[in-house]
Length: 334
Image (cartoon, rainbow, N blue to C red):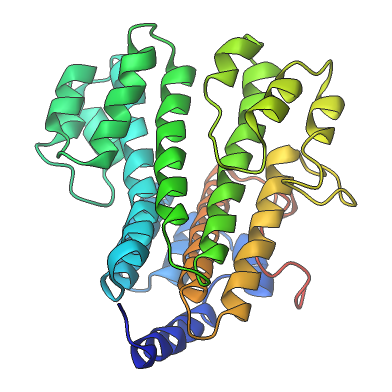
């Protein structure tokens, strides 16, 4: 287990890195740049990146390496939790491959779109089928999660349920790793993990029920146990007559009842995630909470910068895509 002096050193490193993150006024300033090339130059000077795709790839690669690096400074269950947070980036990349296979895209195109962080074994981006993709992935929990998802939904040919099942398996593993973190410093990580699983539940209701119109019983099978939204409450949300009634059942659990689901239920859930991450980071001096909080904030930073890069690429007015950000220092200097 890491010594106190090592945790002190890690805390100092993470506070220094936090001071350089794209948050608050700095994040909003990036949204006002002239182009994606200008954003790339500001973020990665001299790297030769000029397009949104390159920005996104570099952000994912840097985030993956950094979270894995923090995990390497820790031991046992703490390292395992952070390694699984990094694996989320690998899963998102694998989902790009899955979509390519479903669309019948040529391997070269899948390989181009899915270039990203982490080692995947025998060139899974070249897979032409689900079986080839699974065979190319290295043994471990990420491959196991995909195998279970394919076992449940692959034959049905429904991409929504296949991706959702993969996400569910990821969150089941995340909550399992959070559950065994030592007390008391594992509580912040457990809260963040449960909140993210519940944002997934909100997405299933918003997209699965009220957008796609899928059956409640099929969506209920995707419930993640161990989060704030119980299976019973999730069932009630899925059978509610309208979105207001459905998301009202999550108020106080996944978002603040006073603010409601402003901007959409998922965004409201992410705002609470920001508050939990900031609380973990600021309230943890020499325990694991600072690492968990920092990793959460870095993931949000990367997501926000990807939104900015795409907004600039598409020529969307800055005010419009600023509204889509989950600014982890909302109101500070803006």
